[in-house]
Image 1 (cartoon, rainbow, N blue to C red):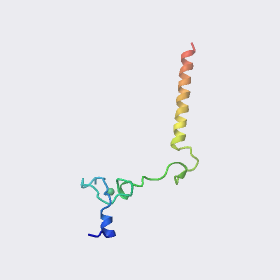
Image 2: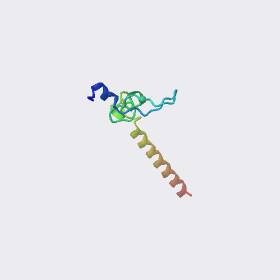
Image 3: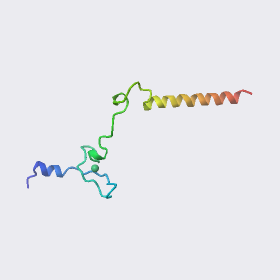
Image 4: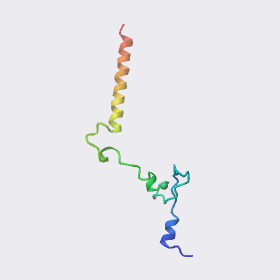
Length: 87
Ligand SMILES: [Zn+2]
């Protein structure tokens, strides 16, 4: 039996997502290299950092937020150390 392109398309890996209404598997063709279809998050949303469409100055990036958190923790530790030394 010769496989036509239509038959090959039906042999594609299927989406493993479960429907929240019916509870059954989605079964739509999965995006190449992914386990789920285009409707169930295979593209993964917008890119991070300066590639994101809403990127302005980088102050709210994960990297900047983490750097501020580390600085704040370091300052807190220094203040606690100073408080323990002063008597
Ligand atoms: Zn799906």
